[in-house]
Length: 213
Picture 1 (cartoon, rainbow, N blue to C red):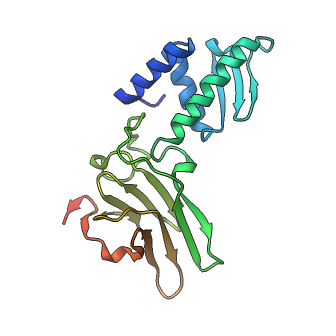
Picture 2 (cartoon, rainbow, N blue to C red; picture 1 turned 60 degrees about the horizontal axis):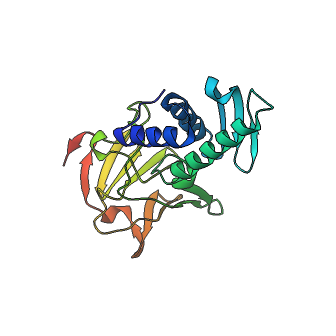
């Protein structure tokens, strides 16, 4: 099970106290709801009646199928976890850069919400986090056509991985809301901010690969 940060441990302890479950059970469900992208969960824990499923909107199944009180408690916990995870940077699709078709000429990705400065609940896993560790947790992430993005609003940094190489840019005072990549005649990456559409080439390069420039 993925390790929790101190903030995550504090949150789990608070939820366990209020919902009447152990911290182990709440941690299990936190991971289950996250794995279900915040809208569903498949779980298996003794305190939840064994194996079961939850879906946002009211569908709940627990091993102790006639225990309606337990169903209500599990549903309340899952709904609160869903809301918390939706406010966590980069954990769910709703907080990521989402791909949108641009009539075959390219694609556009846009943020559906970010929460600069919010602490992450999970310790980053080096196996799945390709950006420099010192940047912490991103406010939004995205990927398309072998190009990956990770935006760190508080640190004013943007990491882009292309061709197996990671570039880190200084985002200056831009408040980035999305990215687009046009194909044909060369590939150009642009982003949208309060200043409109801006080319990535206008941002200062902080580092390339693992060596600061």
